[in-house]
Image (cartoon, rainbow over all chains, first blue to last red; front, side):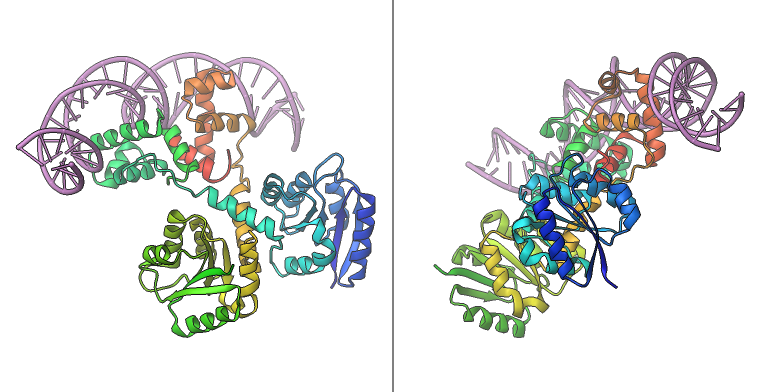
Length: 209
Length: 209
DNA sequence: TTCACAATACCCTAATCAGGGGATTAGACC
DNA sequence: GGTCTAATCCCCTGATTAGGGTATTGTGAA
């Protein structure tokens, strides 16, 4: 059974050349090619594609918005982003929106088919730059700045961020509630916050817990 | 100038075969091969490699721990994980620890050199399965399960997670403090939590804010 | 037209937290 | 031995939060 494909690309020349390319592959069946994604809900509903090739920059709705919409309505639809943008903003947003792969346009002619194949096999095709950015974004969020917290204070903070009350933290750490209070005061000073929620928020967002 | 390489691999047979493989490549200079990573600080200090090929499962310190240590001491050292593990736990931990690439052992013979090349060019070589897992982990954190929160409740929750007291939330949203209280109560019900910290923690971890 | 529900607001009580004290003990460092 | 710090504990007061109500208004669906 051939793969049903939709294409979104606002540049007519490029659109036509991708259309020709896709037609070369007998395993792919192109159901439609659109210059904008403003009616993406209807397009997808009408054709029920297995795969969408999606440009980012288009008049009206962007490919990232369209990706988000399609993924919400039909989560199993595969979406491969085809774009010239290799900046982290666009790449990460596209992936968060639900794109399954991200191919830079300069690689279309040489790698489109292998990328599609990889997608259908459950992989996530990416250009090397893209892979690097994705990995970096994961590593950033796990870099720890300690704020000089002691081990015990980290224990308390961890317990706090699980939603425990002072009383429960005391039980959790096997210390008295007053000691918890003392640790919490020190945590507030070191993190420069003034209440539980702010401490928890900071702790989670900066990877302390 | 050739790339200076260290290898960590506890299986002697595999270690030797990787050693032989690396020696085939005149652009790579193998400075050492170790069966465990317990002295990784000293090894790295002594040889100052550009690249480390790292197994995960080793006696004593794991490759993930070792990666963390090396990256803390020498952030510019590239680390390529070579392992049989293709589960999300190990992959994501290795990447968070600072690994620059992740190659499954079954691909070593065919892709080691291209992976190294990609690494040196600033890329992030990954097997297709690995790439998929990485992407999925990013999508999970941005998949919005709303818990049926209304817009206003989300406003309040957002303000709360910035560390604002009920009083400040009221000012922030331009409503009375009692209304804030009502919204908070509804938020607690919907998220199934019983206090601010738990709500904030859940909100951040599930990507609600 | 009901019915449901979002958004707003108010009241009450018990529990909890914030911020300010002070204090002891055990280790580490010089 | 003196100093410092982590970790432990205690007390007090005022502010805040949790959990339980009730109530009005507007909107949109049944």
